[in-house]
Length: 206
Image 1 (cartoon, one colour):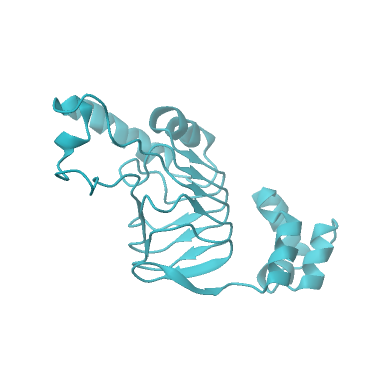
Image 2 (cartoon, one colour):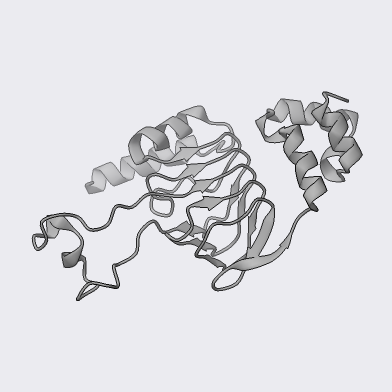
């Protein structure tokens, strides 16, 4: 991409990210042009240099602008780690040796400041939190809080019973307007959830 193309891309990105939470045109552009799927209400992930092609991001995700996903490593078992030995277009090897793809990141995942997702991680479960500076080298379970280098589970956000109750509500499928209506009726369902209140939400109440 030339200088003019880069400038036009930046102008378009600035225009579309004025409302990153709900802009459908922005999501279609990233899907069609960069191979990145982003669910509604997710933000911080509209950067093709940090979020590689093949990445699938759910709804209501929060990405720090310094979080990064790496979708391929240099091979360590060849005679050299130089790209001549894994990129066909550089004129040394007959076939590409790396077939990169991005991870699946479920709904309501938070990637904190300077978090790095490496190729060893193919899936991050719903509701997980990736701590600041964490280097994630394997899959992350739902509702886990992970941190460190390499990242390990520090704790889970909720008990198994609470996790099941949250899953039963499927709240992430609701729109902003629907969440606002729930908050108007009983904000504690969202802010101070209990198994009993979540059961009401799952049953269509309040």
